[in-house]
Amino acid sequence: MFKKALIVGTAFVMLALGAFPVWAAPNQATAMHNIRWGESLYIIARNNNTTVGELKQANGLNGNLIYAGEKLVIPEKAGAFQSSLNERESELLARLVTAEASGEPFEGKVAVVSVILNRIKDGKFPKTITANIFKPHEFESVANGLIWKQPHDEAYKAVEAACKGWDPTNGAKYFFNPAKVKGRSWVWTRTIVERIGNHVFGI
Image (cartoon, rainbow, N blue to C red; front, side, top):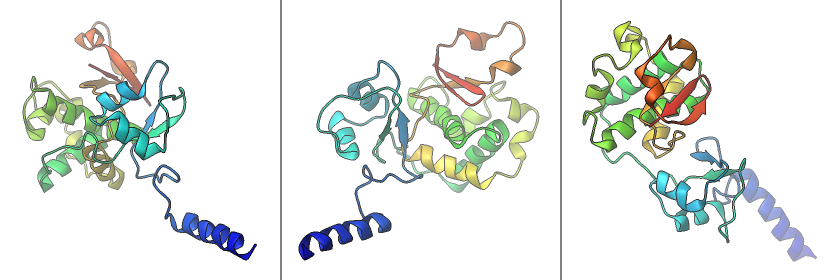
């Protein structure tokens, strides 16, 4: 009886100290994925540059069955941006987030950064963060000068989360606010893959 009480007590202390694996008690800094209808572990793994085995291990899964509406932990190394950012690049991304998504949820801020990183990986866009952000006619915040606003602390956290591999957009390379698009625009030719806050994200 004493041994059982000791085990239960130790487990309670470990839980309080956050000593269990991340899948047992994920914290807010962990990259999470909202499972959508029709997705499988294979699709989620492919879109996040990881493997089914790593997804299972990170989430404590024994089988392949997942359910829409639930959340999955994405292994931190999955989809990680390989090139370490210098201070200027981090600040530029944080400025873009502040200018384009200051009123959006944290997931939406991470999504804006992800779009830039996805463009660099694509090969059809400029190869650097600076060149992508300052590509002519690409971002309204560059044209109107809002890009030079002092970045918010949460913007820097969003940059860090995206560079560690969290991509809430599932590979999107475009984003815009439908409410701000007037009349016909080329943006409507994009295939929308995600909506977060006021922004839609497309490929």
